[in-house]
Amino acid sequence: MKKLLCSCCLCKNTLTTNQLPIHYNSKQCKTGYLWSQKPKKTNLVCEFCGEHKKTAQSISQHQLYCKQNPHAQKKVPSYGMRGKKGANQYTYGAIMTDGTKHKIRNSTRLANIKRWSIPENKLKHALAMQKAVRENPESYTNPIHRGRVKCFEYDGVRFQGSWELIFYKWAKSKGLDPVRVKQGFPYVWNGQRTYYPDFYLESLRLYVEVKGYKTDRDDAKWQQFPNKLLVVDKKAIDRIKQDSYTIES
Image (tube, rainbow, N blue to C red; front, side, top):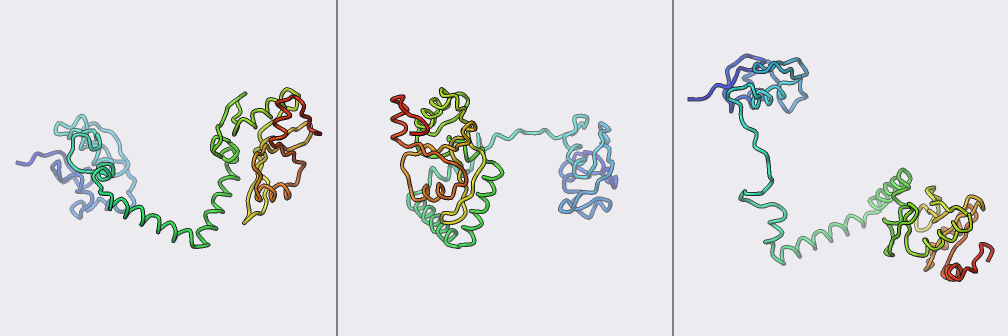
């Protein structure tokens, strides 16, 4: 014998536990709606506890698990794959043969080659990255996200490599108060790009770039930089260590 749960709050038909969830998605409930459509907002009341709901879907789910319902279903928490038979992406990977792994890697590589061989995709990606940098400059200027050198944190500031830290300490000792640059400067090098110098010395109205190995790209952005720029190289760092460096040297 089927166990009666409740009556439909819309059409008042008597339903069983298994029938209620799909009742509103059928033609049996002529006053209901299809779940694939936008829910109709109304004022529905649970016949067990009197709680108000706005949609037929919410009232049906509520009445299934209502604590005042003598035939309420019990909610069983989900623990993923623990204690269950079956497979997911991790178990599939564990039993995957080397041939299958190679096939997947190769297909992914070919798909990426095809994707980036289309100029429109490259342009779209470049524009999206430029927009992200403009809207979130701190994500680009944060040294922990760039380069392969070791990062340091000092005085609440992150530094990309020991040279930046050395110059920062030297500038602080001279009362120059160096600050990180968060304003980007556009330049052209194989397309439109944005340049962020390392520091700005407000008292001297001077931007500073701490640089080790110089590239053609560096020459391009320095030549197009609209403000006064000081490039601190290895020789300058050595002079700072010897306490013989000045801005004019």
